[in-house]
Length: 586
Image (cartoon, rainbow, N blue to C red; front, side, top):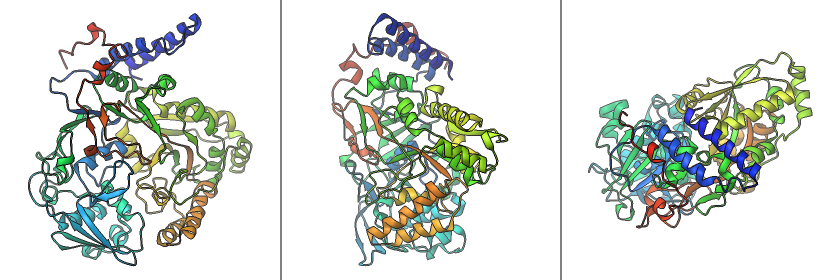
C-alpha cells in the first residue's frame, strides 16, 4: 500500500474509534476532517502539478489505458476514450444505450435478415480533412479480423460471412469476408445468420473506423502521430502516461454542432482517496466506477444526491486456468465455487446493493432468464474435494489468486474480496491461497497469455442480449481466457444465434449456461454489479443512467456557473496550506 494512503486510513480508523467512544455520530461528524486529510494525501499521491489550463471537463477514469487502438482495447477505461475518438457505423443513444445512426445515416436490411446495406453520410471527413469512405470501414473490420492484429474482440465480427474462417487462417483472401464497399458511400454486409443485435455491434469499438493511411505509414506507432486522424467527435491531443489523456472537440465531425464540450481530460487515478479529493475540491467533474470511493465512506456517500447507483449489466467472477493442475479437475473447480459465501461478500465488502450471483448472465437481460447454479454448499464442497483426492485439503497445492491492484492497495475492493475468499477456502476446505496483486497492464497481459491459475475478472455487457455474456466462453473466443473448450457448448451458442424463435433461442442459451455454471464450471460467478458514478447533476448534463452504463462523451456538457468546490466551500475544505504547494522538483 502507498505510504500516504496507509497513513490516511490509519487516521480514519482512529477518528472512527474516537468518535465512537465519545458518543458522536461517526462518520458524519468526522467527514469534513477526513476530506481535509484526503486533500493532503492526494497531493502526496499525485506528485508534481503542471501549470496548464484546466480542461472544460475533467473525468477520473480509474486506470491507465492499455491501448487506444480500437482493435486492441479491452478494458472499460479504454473504451470510454476510444469510442470518443473513433466512431462506427452506429453509435449508442445516451439515454437508452440502443443503436442510432453514426457514420451511416441509414441502412436497409434484407427480408431474411442476413444482408445489411449501409449508406454513409455524404459529409464524412477525418479530423485532418480527408474523406471517410466505405473502403475505410472494410479496411478497419478486416484489420480487426486479421490474426496478425491479435484482436481479442475479433469474435464480434464472426457473424459476418467467412469472418471466423479468415481469422482462423482457413481463408486467406479477405475479399471473401462478408463486407464490401459498393461505392464510396455504400457498404454491403453479409451475415451468416440473422443477428438481432448486429446494429449494436456496429457501435462497439472493435468495429470503429480507423485511419488506414496513418496505420499503413507508421505501423505500430500510428497512435503517436499528431495530428491523428479521428472519425469520432473528439481528437486525441495528448496521451501522457500516468498523467492524463486529453481530447479536443473535432470540428470536422459530422455532428460537431451538437458536441458542446471543447476540451476533456481523462485522468488515470486508481486511488479512492485522490479521486474523492479532486472531485470535492473542484479538480474533477465526473468520477466513473465504484472502485473510486473509499469503502469506509460508502454508507455516507450513497445518501448524497451527487452519488448515483442504477441497474447495470455487469458481473464480477473468478476465472480458472483449466489447463493447469489441479484446476483441470471439475470437482476441484466446483468445490472452490461452493465454498464461497457470496452473500457475505456483498454484505460485508461491496455494500452498494450488488446481488450475489450463482449464474453468469445478469438478471434483467432482455428476453432471457438464467438457470440456477451450484449455490453455497460447504459440505458438498468438502465431499467433492475429497473425491478429487484432497480430503480436508490434504496435499492440495498452494496456488496464486491474481487480481489487479491500483493505488490505494487494501482500500480497493478486489483486495478485500481476495482476502475474504482466502479465508473462506482455508476455513471450509483447508487449502491455502497466495494473493497476487498485479499492476493493471500486467494483469491484462497475464490473462491474455493465460499466465495464471485463478484470477478475478469482470464482464460488462456490450449489448442487451444473453449472447454478449455466453459467447464469451466459446472455444475460439478471444476473451475466454480459461483454456476451457466444450464442443457442445459452442454448438448451442451457434444454434441460439441462428434461432429466430425467441422461446427456442432462450432454451438453447439456458442449456449452454447450465454447462458453464453447473456442469463444468471454468468460472465462479460472484456477484452482479450495480452501476455507480458521482457527479453534480445540477451542473453536469447529458448523463443518463442506462443498463449498459454507456455515456457518450459528445452528449455531456457543463452548465455555465461556479465550479462544484465554489458552490459548497464548507463541505469541501481546502487543502492544508503547507501541503498545497506544488512540488518545486517534479
